Image (cartoon, rainbow, N blue to C red):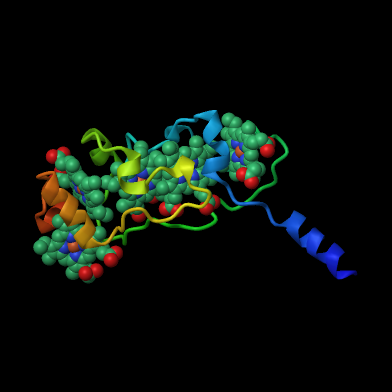
Length: 134
Ligand code: HEC
Ligand code: HEC
Ligand code: HEC
Ligand code: HEC
Ligand code: HEC
């Protein structure tokens, strides 16, 4: 097969990744796709069914295609607790609707957590973020 045709076929086969920036004009609320972000521990990801509301013929794909923010299992982190403290998503994740490609805005290592807790007078005892016996 001619190289150019091969390249074209390969490009069409690979689903373009989800871009927050492309969807910014729709002014969708974050919780429309990340249902747990305000009331649950996990923000969660949308399924392809959620995409098909607007893209009816979208093929099945892996969501997420990658992970940017992830704490180890022995760390307690809850989106609900932080939403209740009135922190904006952008405080930790940046302005995702302005980014062509998401990048880590605020690292998730222990010092980054503790620095902000200190600033906000939130608990920095070990057991706030680590369950006893783990
Ligand atoms: C139309 C659906 C949709 C909306 C609305 C949406 N997102 Fe997303 N978001 C996604 C998808 C899909 C991914 C996974 C991208 C991938 O496949 O890599 C994602 C990934 C993310 C991630 C990366 C998480 C990780 O650990 O990899 C963050 C942070 C995020 N979104 C924040 C937000 C915020 C904040 C808002 C509102 C300002 C928002 N999103 C609105 C669909 C959406
Ligand atoms: C509320 C409607 C809506 C939802 C929900 C939605 N999209 Fe879109 N999407 C759009 C619109 C509008 C455009 C821009 C017009 C176009 O090119 O179709 C678009 C464009 C795109 C594009 C092509 C442009 C680009 O970014 O490269 C992709 C890929 C895409 N969406 C993926 C997704 C995925 C994956 C989901 C689910 C996580 C999703 N969309 C959910 C409305 C939506
Ligand atoms: C105080 C910082 C902080 C705030 C505020 C915050 N997040 Fe997160 N977010 C994180 C951390 C840390 C993780 C990794 C959690 C894990 O691995 O358990 C994460 C993970 C995520 C993920 C990946 C999926 C998941 O459930 O782990 C998405 C999507 C996300 N956040 C969206 C949001 C949205 C939308 C908001 C606003 C409603 C928000 N976040 C507010 C720190 C924050
Ligand atoms: C942007 C600032 C900020 C960052 C970053 C942040 N937190 Fe928090 N965190 C807070 C605030 C504010 C509260 C609410 C304190 C309250 O309700 O009194 C809180 C509450 C919590 C609580 C509940 C504590 C309790 O005793 O009720 C846990 C657990 C927690 N955070 C874990 C983490 C972890 C783990 C990280 C890093 C991955 C992190 N936080 C990053 C500001 C932050
Ligand atoms: C505000 C939340 C928070 C508090 C308070 C906290 N930790 Fe952590 N801790 C974390 C996070 C997040 C990680 C994961 C680090 C990473 O992924 O790099 C971690 C990791 C660790 C690790 C694994 C090794 C390492 O450094 O990655 C140990 C051990 C640990 N913590 C002990 C403690 C002890 C002891 C205390 C009390 C003095 C404490 N932690 C208080 C959030 C916290």
